[in-house]
Image (tube, rainbow, N blue to C red; front, side, top):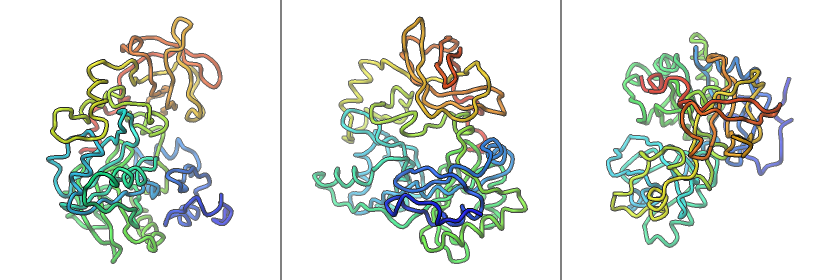
Length: 380
């Protein structure tokens, strides 16, 4: 029996409100994300994938810390942080955004939630945006308050997640639209629920607003989900790569710009708002990019797990890029990968060589996402 006390790098790595529950339910391996433990191992990752795509999984993603922005100038300030046009964002809506620096580099690719006219949460990928936002605010002249609230999300993801939500919250939760949110309670536990997630499947995120009730919330959801086949799980590398979803620090970082990722739709250079990185992104768009994100199918034996290093990509004896995320998809029966390559090698069908952990292999550039390109499962 694993004891939660056996884990520890000291108190500087924070534990989520669900930490003890995840250990009780079989988590054996953890990673660190936003200075917190995140469960990364509930046994076989392939079984975790099938649990997700066939039924449902519950994931502790309290590491998605919230940067809370309130005050009379909250909306104006949030627009400063991102090149995506937020002028039509309604209260109760969520949006996927990029946060860029003065060079147009990506600092984070979070979900933005608008809880009220002057109340936003930035639900983070893995980087210190609380510090960035507080720093930007100092000389902005805007009236905002920025902090990290007591908010800890869970992800309930998979085709049965809707039925589990109905069992938890009643029929009215079923009309919650993709990328919208609402405030609910579960036996007095205060939550914000959104139709979002990091799986490309139907899914919900439940933002707990009282950390002292994490254990109770986890157990209630698992007990209700039992009859629907709900399993404890972790965000699936297989499914998110199939869906072409980015992992910050792997597929994008401070030196990556939105145009290299094909994220032109998330950049509005024509709006009046002066967001950070506007001049740089205008210049990058005019000059064009030198490299581009692509999908790859790698022709070798099934990979034993995701890559833990960036694998070099070669063509005609020259290094032309790197594999950022690779995994074997048991559903597609292929090794699939996201990669960053020189633009001149980025055409669909181009053949290149990938130097995998076990040696060189042939690979072909293909379209992304690898599965369900229209995201019809998540948006259904």
